[in-house]
Amino acid sequence: MEKIINTLKKVKVRYYVAALLVIIAVVGIAIFKPSYSVPTSLLDDQVLDGLTLTDISLTEDDGVTTYQATVTATENKTVNYIEIVLKDTEKDQAITLIGYVGKTLANGETSIIKASTDADVIHSTEVTYTVK
Image (tube, rainbow, N blue to C red; front, side, top):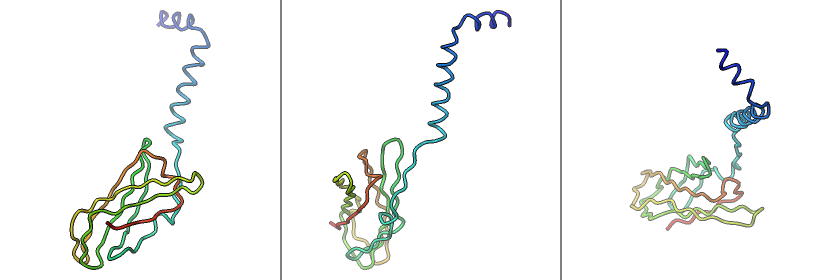
């Protein structure tokens, strides 16, 4: 034990301070991870041509943003994909995501679409959809 104490006495104070600052930074990042509030208008249910989109979510994790929605047919409808354009009016940018369905949905049938991007779309202010 005495050997450990003598070794610790030899280490300069600045190393203790540096180690403490690193620990504080790591704990701070873990506890206070930035979170973003997505405008609710982006998450509102959507009625498209023969389809409804519900349970819409836009989440970010480690720099990747994922869009997910449940697509429900309100009539028999062939859907290859749904083009989702997320716009950030402040940055004057638009990012297009593709939600793949790839089949004919019978009236009332559902499908989950999911699309991800590493672009900064979590701050989007507008969304438009096109059924293809």
